[in-house]
Each structure stands twice: as structure tokens, then as C-alpha cells.
Image (tube, rainbow, N blue to C red; front, side):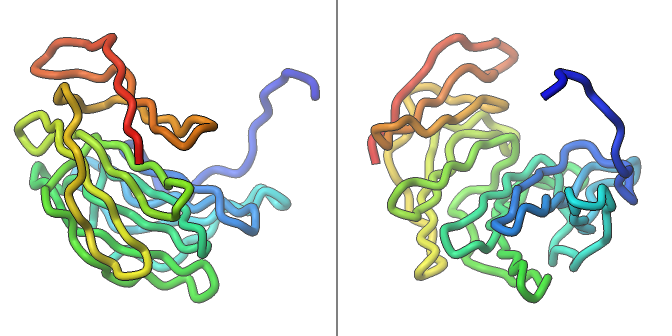
Length: 191
């Protein structure tokens, strides 16, 4: 450990508004992004042993400002986001063994700028975000069925917030924005 930054390989595409996930094999999957002409569907894999990026299968839907969560089975769940100002409720799964994306159940609400947390029971909690309206709603994704279900709403609508899973399994949501106001409030979700 040197505390020093060093350059590594560059991605093949310029990206912002993308999501990144560390796969079980140590590779990093980067998905989607915003570009000058809207969102894109391309994805890339980073090999930390070589420092090289390579394209992998493209998502079914172009998206940015989405979430990407590594499930207990090793697959990656991508949910929501936006494409050229259109908010999405679609979700898809990436299979690292085949490098192929497949659609799964859609969320009940369109949303971008939300958070996603993989709970200890394997379910995925999605909270808040925006779809033109700031959201306090939350949903759970069941990987065994591919179905989303509503769960308790947050006390405050928020987007661009964080969500952290605590050692006791509860989820701490903190900060974010609501109607232009920056928030210092926090909330706990008990699965």
C-alpha cells in the first residue's frame, strides 16, 4: 500500500451516469451511460489482472442513472434509469458466464437516481429516486421469481441519496435532494 494513484487502461467509451459492479470473478462490469445523444446500452468488462477493458453484451435497453446490483447467484440486476429524459421501470439481468443480458420483471414505478441494496435474504431493495416527481416509494425484487413488490415508503421523498446495509441487516438511507433542497435527514429500513 503506497497511497499513490496510478493510471490503468481506459474504457472504450466515454461514460458518465453509468453503474459499476464487481463480479464474483473480480472483473468489473460497467453498464450504460449518458452521452451527448442520450443514453447508451453498451457495457464493458475490466480485467484487474491486465488493466484491459473489453466490450461485453449490450443491455436490451439504453439507460443512464440506473443501479446495478450483484445478486447472490452472481448475476447482475440493472434497474430503472432514464433514456433521453424518459424514465424507465424496466430491469434486466447480466449473466457473467454467458455475457448475455436478459429481461426480467419491471419495477412498479419508473425511476432514476435511486438506490438499490441487496439484502441478506437475497432480495433487492430499491428506494426513492425521481421520475419527474421526487419519490419516497420503495420496492423489493425477488430474484427467484423475477417479480417486484411494493414495500414501505420512506418518510421523505429523496433522490441522489445513499443506501448502506448495516451489520444488523437494516438499510440506512441518508441525504439526497428533494425539490431542490439538499437533505441531511436519514432513515432506517427494517426488512
